[in-house]
Every structure is written in structure tokens, then in C-alpha cells.
Image 1 (tube, rainbow, N blue to C red):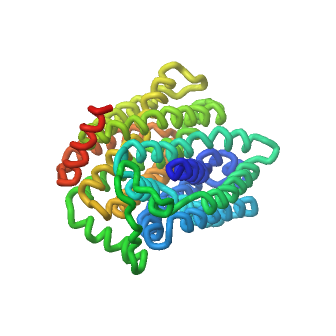
Image 2 (cartoon, rainbow, N blue to C red):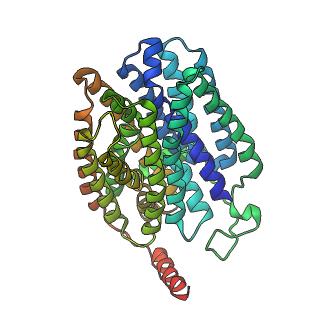
Image 3 (cartoon, rainbow, N blue to C red):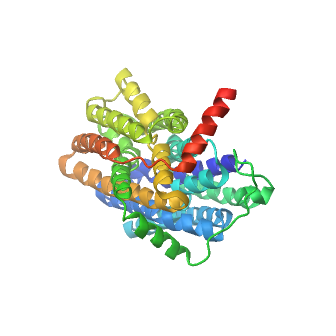
Length: 420
């Protein structure tokens, strides 16, 4: 039940955050803002979406997941609802960039790490894969709905109001049904044999988050994970999720059709990320990361030749391959954080995810500027393909640190599977 509620919250938060990707054209038509200006607002959203994650993880540990999640949803609803009154670009930056960015960042992949490590001893990889897929899929599946609303009589304002209402409706579900720890329901973590009394950390949540970062930066593994994940963000949320629709539209493809392709990427991402989580419980996560990044790089290098007025079979092949790979990097990255940082894994992963979103923010603005200056997105796709190959190399440079406890758990898992 907890994993299910977390899945719904992640789908919603990611979908709300990604909505501006379908609003680029309508905002340009009404206000005359450039792609770079709108891209900057989205960059602020993406950056805060990531930087908020480690502090949100610390707040969840200190004050509870339920309170932080409900507050975040209310913040998203407020930011989205107020956009219907905006008249200037700075208001877009403050509302959709700052408010929605902060709210969505509080329910991001750091939230995944908290739930998977707190509620599950076994199948952590699989659960983190399912929850991660919910976040990524939400950001893509919402887009056709938003694109359709923007072409209705209500225009982009109708989409903003729908997002606001759905976010508000999520708040009571979280407050009524979510529980903080397995012990609150009188059960052990999944796969565990003992009910563990909760021991939330005391002290300032910001201090907890900063201490986690300081300790992590003393290790080589953190920098390699952060660099690879920054490239991951640049080549997914920052580039494809933000600029795929306007890029396709540049080549004559209708906005709704392009949004439909992104939704299809979301469907295959759900499959790919869950399968990645299953593999992470069984395969060296470094190898998985290297494979995923290499596959992504090849697909992005080929993408500029696939755009056109009609959806071709080659574009469908790209959608399938890229979709299976879209955020399949999350479960192995969480596994490596857990392996290297133990009890601090959720907070450290929050900082790694912050790097992911900083990369996404830079990419969102850079791609918009490339489009403004070259009147074509092609250089952005090629650069993203090359960077993905670099991320594959960085992933293989991370050393494994098998802990004694992990070895015991691995032996028990093998025994359980053999018995099954």
C-alpha cells in the first residue's frame, strides 16, 4: 500500500512539473516570449526540482514523509493555479519555476530512496524501479492530456487549472492513508523478520542534508555518480522531456502527435525501469549503467534524422529503445549509493539527484539557445549523444564495495529463490 501511494504521488508530481514542456508554443503565441526565456523558467524548475531533493529527504527523516508530501502537493497546486493570472515572464519563473519546482522536488527520486530503504529489506531494486518509473512516466503520460487541453477553448490556462485541482485532491489521500514506518502498522520491513522501532534523526534537517553532502564529497564514488547522473538529467528531463515537442513541431509534426510519442516513451519507460530494478537485484549495477548510457547515446545521435511531418516506423523504434532506457539508470544508481553510503543513502542520493537536475536545467536552457541561434535542435541532440557515452565510461570507473551485510542478504536471496 505504501509503495502504491508513493507511486501515485510520484506520477502526479512528475506530471505537474513537466507540464511547461507542452506550453512552450501557446506561451510564445500569447506573450511573444522567446524559446530561451521559457526554457530558462523550465531550467529554474528543473534545478529546484533537483536541489530540493536532499533537503526534502532530510525533512522527511526529521518530520515525516506524510507532512512533507502533503505540503509539497499544496505548493504545486498554488504555483500552477496562480499562473492563470500571470502577465510577465518573471511571474512564469516565480510560479512554475520556483513554486512548482520546490513542490515537485520534494516528491522526487529522493522520495523513492526513502521509501525503498525504509520499507523494504528485500526487493529494494525492484521497488525503486517501480517507483522511479512512476516518476518518469508521469512526466510523459501527462503531456498528451495537457497538449489537448491547450488546444481547447480554455487554452493553456485550462491545463494549469486542471493540474492545480488534481494536486489539491492528492493531499487528503496522503494524509489519510500514508504511514511513516513499518512499525507504525505493527509489521517488519518487507523481507525482514523483526519490527524495528523508528529512530528519526534529531537536529536541524538542513544540517543533516549538508553533513551528508560533505561526507559524500570526500569519496570518489560520489563524484562519479553525480557526474554520470548530471548527464542523465541533461539527456532526459532537460532535453527530450522539454524540447522534443517543439523540435518535432519544427519539422511539421502536430503538437498532439509529438506529445503522444512522449507518452509512448513513458509507457516503455515503465517497462524498462521496472525491469532495470529487477536486474539491479541480480547484476553489477555499474554494468547496467554503462549499457543504458551507451544505448541512450546511440539513439540520440540518430534522432535528428527521424523527425518529419509523419510518424515513421524508425521514429517508433527510437521511442521504444529510448523509452526502455529513459530512466532505467535510477535503480542501479540508488543501489550504488546504498552500497557506498549505507544509512545515509537516501540523503546522498538526493544530492546525486540534485546533480541530475542541475544537468537537466543547463540542458533545457542550452537547447533553447541553440534553437534560437541555429534555428535547429540538431546540435543539441548530437551533443547529448556524445555525453551519454561519456557517462557510460564514468559509470565503469566506480569501484564496488561489497559489505558483509549485503553478502549475507545476497546469500539469503539466492537460497530463497532456490527454494521457490
